[in-house]
Length: 189
Image (cartoon, rainbow, N blue to C red; front, side, top):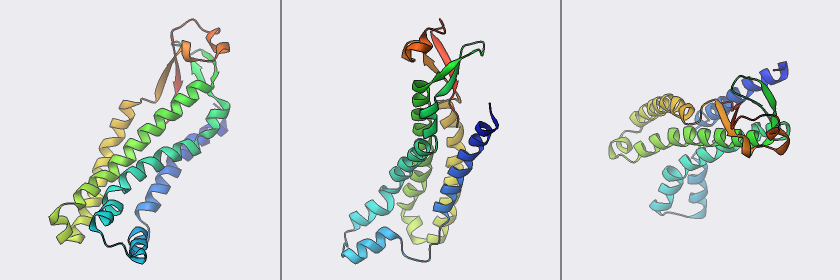
């Protein structure tokens, strides 16, 4: 592993955390953009307000979580990822393993952020929370923190850091370098 690769592993989690922290803790002194846009357009339907305020955010967080992985790790698609056999012997760099690793990571990140955003959104539907917005703010942050803390190990257990790919799914030149049916790669976080 080169010094450059080592720094890349630090950058992604930091940038993801930084983006999430910035979004969640932005300046809330102005009305929310969807509410402001709906007010200017004259949309008064409670169903549309509910859709943009409660239903749409979790899928958007999930989508943006997956997209951030794809954008930040796109260079892996160009370079490939190193694959090894059971003994740890390097077989080569695979573009197909890189594609699989990026898809798995994007999916786990989408689930992680989407479910973390979903819990406070569901809590907002409670009549007790609408009567006491200060309590919702505190409980919403605590629920997001607890959910995120629980989802991290769940996300990593669904797609462990050490991924595998069948030899038959690899590029032709790599199939010839190993006779093992399954090879391994570091999926990353």
